[in-house]
Every structure is written in structure tokens, then in C-alpha cells.
Length: 79
Image (cartoon, rainbow, N blue to C red; front, side, top):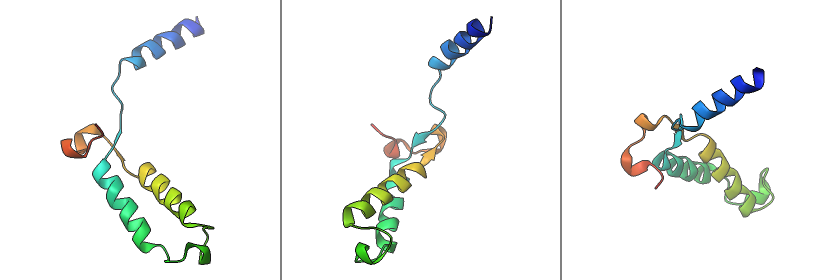
């Protein structure tokens, strides 16, 4: 009986729209600010290379730019 209930929940969730989407405008702004606030020489900070710094900023901006779909402007939603 538990398996049947679990399967029913999965079926119902499969038709749902996502609860959050990435606000691309906010993501771009957060990425730019992260890069601007970073030292010119990433080797002098926590990061070993410029690539590591870019990866950090990209991941940080992505994780912090999720919003409910109704809060994201149409031009800022992923296409």
C-alpha cells in the first residue's frame, strides 16, 4: 500500500510546473558583482586560479538566483 501511495505522489508531481526558476537577469548581476569584488590576482586569495574564481562566482550566482516564476520578468526567464 505504501508503494502505491508513493507512486501516486510521483505521478501527481510529474505534471506540476517548477516551483522556482532561474532569474537570468539576477544571475548576471550577481555574477558581475562577485567578479568585481574579487581580487585582481586570484592566486593571492583563496582561489588557485582565475578559472576557479569564475567557477565559484558562476555557481554562487546560479544558486542564489532562483525565484518563483511569477517574480521573474519574461525577458529574464531562461529560453
